[in-house]
Image 1 (cartoon, rainbow, N blue to C red):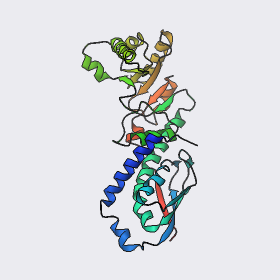
Image 2 (image 1 turned 90 degrees about the horizontal axis):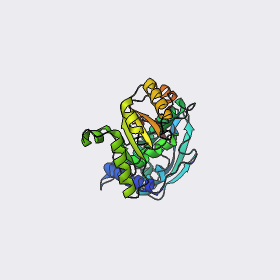
Image 3 (image 1 turned 135 degrees about the horizontal axis):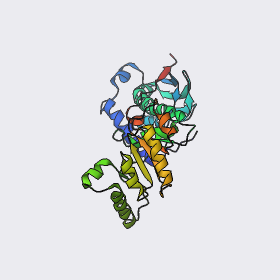
Image 4 (image 1 turned 60 degrees about the vertical axis):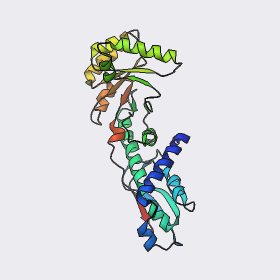
Length: 294
């Protein structure tokens, strides 16, 4: 499987790798490895999965070690986005033992985090595979990690929501509250007017938390309506109302407290999209380790 890791992702990865190594080394270095491992000793180490899941973060290996030394060679045996089982050989690295030890925790921090997100995403995707619903992430990401975490979601078979406030219009309940008593339809109309005036191609999405707000929003046919914390029964009613309206092209997105136990029923209500903040902020790490030959 090949998942795009573009130049923006690479730039973000280099910044994060540099920050992570600086946290460990400052201007001094790895005192343990420097004091116990001969500088001319070379070694080979394997990266191995300790449990079933989806691997993500192999792209970080050359980036991390290029920050330390150019002398570490990396051979990947699987690709980001591939399913792995317990004891799957993920990658092999050869180079100065000092550098392998120095970079070990940094590499594992990235790989266990990103693989955890990819693995959790894949579980949600599997639960809704028999429906038309698409699994999406949100902006609930760690500062600086957004591009990498959203890459991990793609590796798990999910789809990215907007990357930030700059590339999409999403009118939330707090925007409506800040406007006073303005209706959902009026907010959509204002957003569309702004987008046209500034030659933006941004889709317009609005959050609603009641059937009444849904009906109001449908009057202006936004590209997406987010159904916030609605029950599957209410979502099914929302789908029927959308299908019977003049805004049949409007996509309906479910969001709010979605779990592996509830996502199937949500998808079976007929919604088009399901956004899940926990993919990036709460996915458990996938257990991955370094196996040394001695």
